[in-house]
Image 1 (tube, rainbow, N blue to C red):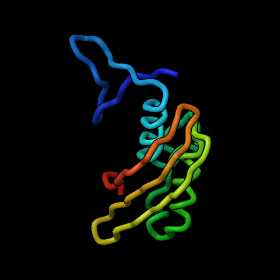
Image 2: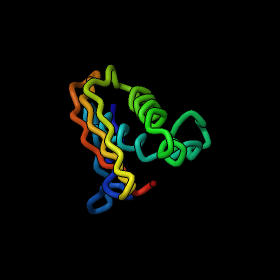
Image 3: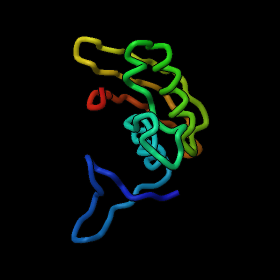
Length: 116
């Protein structure tokens, strides 16, 4: 599998050429994209995305939704050692997990805060 590399809020490029990402790095990029997708934001698939506002009030629901989105990424085989820490004062969510993919393992350590 191959995809265009995303850096920050845009596409990675140099002198008009786009950079590509493949295999385990592509799956990792898709997981991060899933974590930053709001519920119902993607009109072509209403099941994509996480309802962060509702999850803030119910962390069990939030954990279930985040797990569902990670497992739903193409190439993900299993999700192990999943941990979610919610900092209510700063509205940050720290997500850590060991993820097994068809290309190898990913150690995820992602802080989600821009969407809360």
